[in-house]
Amino acid sequence: MKKWLLWPLLTIWIGLAYAGILVGITPDELQAMQSKGAVVVDVRTPEEWKKTGLIPGSKGLTYFTASGGYDKEAWMKQLKGLANPPNQPVILVCASGTRSALIGKMLATEAGYSQVYHLDKGVRGWSAESKLLEH
Image (cartoon, rainbow, N blue to C red; front, side):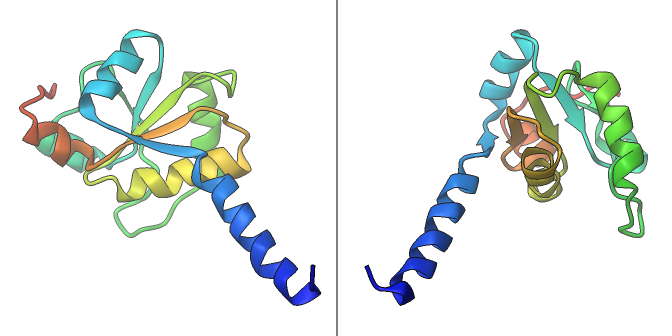
C-alpha cells in the first residue's frame, strides 16, 4: 500500500474507534439502565435544575459555570464519589444533549470510563416524551 493512502485510512480507523465510545440513549433506555444501577448525572447549572427539575434519581453535578468556564479536576473528583469504579455505567444529562455529549467524550477518552452514555435531546427530549421531573 502506498504511504499517502496510509494516513487517511489510519485517521478514519481512529475516528471509527472513538465513534462507538459515547452512546446516545433515549429516555426509555435511560430508565431501564438506571433501574440496573447506572448513575445518572445532570451536568446543567443549579438555575436550570430549579427551572425544570431533575430526572428522578439523577444527581446534579454542574460541569460548566454560567460563563462557560469549568474545573475538570474538581468535577472528576466529585464524579468519582458518585460513579466508582470507572466501569460503572454513567449517563450524562443536560438541556439538549450537547454539553452531555462533550463531557461524555472526555470521560470516555481521557478519564478511563468504559461505559459512558448521554441522553439524546437532553431534558427537553425527556419532557417531550411526558416523562416526569422532580423539583
